[in-house]
Image 1 (cartoon, helix red, strand yellow):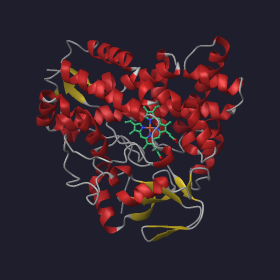
Image 2 (tube, protein in one colour):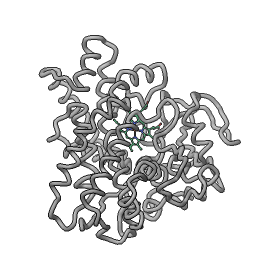
Image 3 (spheres, protein in one colour):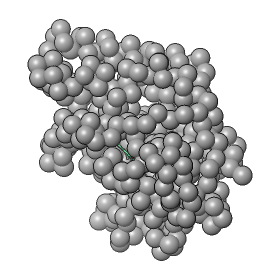
Image 4 (cartoon, helix red, strand yellow):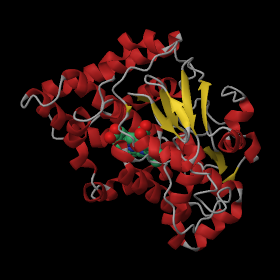
Length: 393
Ligand code: HEM
């Protein structure tokens, strides 16, 4: 049986998921939050789940902790990842222009600058925590600037969002406090921008809300919440997990140092092999349906385990081998279907810049502790390390 709170599972969930793919690829389990959900662990089934319109985002998830938190999270729960069409289409369209490959590419010089500054700041040090010094501050600074959020606030919401997304404290006082503070913070941010104006994404969204009435107040604060959280809690793990994979078997790092032509396929392989997002968010069956021969009742929550689907040997040859030059890589790390990650071009660009700068500046980079001593963060939603201590030369 799966034990999500077991440290051995948290450190390496892959054997347990491999077991599920073999013995019960569609299995109803109790999650640490107290909710029951169907876990879908094979690639083809997971892909189907993500694209099936009968699996809705719009229905309430029932379960032990879901109910109590509904009032608390009302202000931030009407975002595009929580609703079905036509609301989903409307909300996604409002911001999609800001996330096209072209618009994101235009951010390149600024992202390069942020990466340079962060690495300048650690020059001369022997040892650093790569998560704290680089993998975390890079994406958070980028999303803050894109939205127009003051950078000096980022330490606060790092703390809140860690508690919120880890999920392991769902139902606890600390979780409720973090939620409340994050919601209050977003309220202050919107009030301040309304009073002072601006020309960033936040100001643009306020304009859409106030002048054109295409967005409710709740949808506006939910959008800001989603973009802030999704914009950094994930990319930190792409940079962190990728660096871990390269440094824990250092010939990979050396190979990439010598052949930068492998960078793009390497990043896709990090996404597949140890993706930042372990499971999809919940879908709820809007009617009775069948997945892979198993009957799902109307109202049942379903989750696609992206981490597992991406290791499915029926889809990926030698799925448990990390191949920096893997030729075809249709992984599900960014999801699939209408909720496919809006930020994928941004995440890829940030990762490309991050690894290029790391390889250029610190070719001698190595782990400062044995890989088995590293601690992985708990919670089934995200997959990432608490810390990644490295020596710079
Ligand atoms: C949705 C992964 C970075 C914004 C998603 C989903 C996944 C994902 C798996 C779909 C979840 C589901 O269907 O249940 C990732 C990964 C990232 C990343 C692995 C980094 C490596 C970003 C960034 C942003 C972002 C930088 C930027 C702001 C979003 C949004 C959605 C989303 C807005 C909801 C899309 C919708 O509902 O239509 N992401 N994400 N993500 N992501 Fe990302």
